[in-house]
Image (tube, rainbow, N blue to C red; front, side):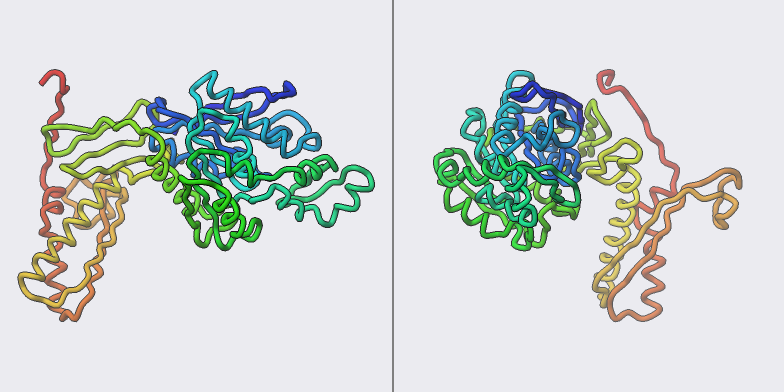
Length: 406
């Protein structure tokens, strides 16, 4: 996933900071516009994880800081819900003029309500997604309960939202109260996906029902189960992104990805950006990657993970075949493996020169079943005879050619 800093200007001429995230090949076939929650900014981990689910499917994602939030210019105190909606429309226009018109709009929390309000004004948008969104923008007024009298008395007050101070003016409250979503949602005429957690303590699950009931088909609802409002658990945000990407295939024309083909056993392709790598082994598709700390995106196992996994898979299959042939009561076979570099002199059975480091794979067998001590020992010996184990111990010759020269 390639991330680029971009800027655009709101209706008041103030610069808004944004991030444009692109697929690995930097060639998105369409774009999504992401509106984050009221107290968040574009760098929230959950937002990045959801965006990742889309870029993996070839969709570019623009996420930005609303006026007065994050790195964007302007004073938050001078904004309101209507100005946030206008920021979204401006962002959509910026995308259309400079990259591609957004076909997808996604909003989280109050950003979801703003997305529903803005969607009818974005003609290119075909699909809309809300995540933990209130059915009525005025729902957030409860966040100011302790300050309502102060705001009414002097026209403004400093409130704490999500542990951060915000100056809120009376016009912000009045604007929220004057906004109704139901009629807008009913007339939206776009595919809608409502996502919400029944355990959301900030915006109750009943809001999802109201949004869903107000909308016309096509519409869908997906529960986020035990997730919290901000999707702080990495698994929740990654799941959300993958579900959105899959749902979109019903309403957005996805191009057929060029398949990897080869007359060889395995074919591998790495794109022009990053380390995310496609693998096709026979009729099976895999991916490989590197950890974030070395420049990867950690979306797949590393090459060494795959190598060690091959040994583990071959080991367990070999033991299964042997035990079945012997009719031994072996139930589950679990193989634990760890690759490392060790000093040669510390490896007692190494036949190599005792200088430098060598590769070592530590393998532990967890055998479940009513096996005797002799049977367990025999299975341990058989593990060393699995084909991949033997291959790793034999001399391996790798012959490299340039494909175009073959």
